[in-house]
Length: 293
Image (cartoon, rainbow, N blue to C red):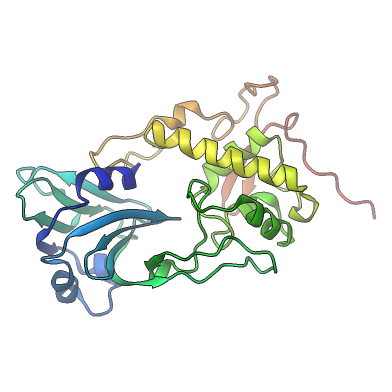
């Protein structure tokens, strides 16, 4: 939802002035804040793109303003008359005098930098049949991250080949950004529920049909979430206008522990997963059988 908002509100506009208001926000830009300001001032934003947890705005200089939102980062489009937010870290004003772009980050785990655009290195996922080769230019720190299921160039068949070669659990593979990006913990649980697959199923046992199904369901979940403005369990997660999403009200399994499955009525179960949680229906998504000794 953030990328769409940026494309609508800031692409095509020329930066008149840039202000860095917190050094930690540009810590990833090793040349320092003055260099960030110099590389942004006078440049036109030509495109808004996303991959995994990264968002970037391409500049007319073969570079990009790259943002990692961390746990609490927000890119907000605000009227210049709006008072500065308490945790404002970067401010872009435009030559047209219109709405500003502000990077706000309460916990300062996120950050921005200006990066060169490079050709993405193909990600093979560790196997001979890797994910689709990237031929477009991306910021250098993003080159290792795979496409997400909504990318027009996403090759689901090649991703399934890479998934099956991984020798891990299915949910872990769906969260591996060298294979596929953008799914995340919540959307993974929702996609697995829709595909009737358990997250601990070994990827080596995944049929090609089942692999294509879970990727299709992931794309479906992500598309529906974008239409509803995304999920918003934390008040810090908002779109560029500062509005929270509503997709969390449409979740079938995530956060629904002990509530009846909307498909079969069985209580949803929660299990610990990588310092987080996994939610599933034990009837619709039976765990894989343990191999006999």
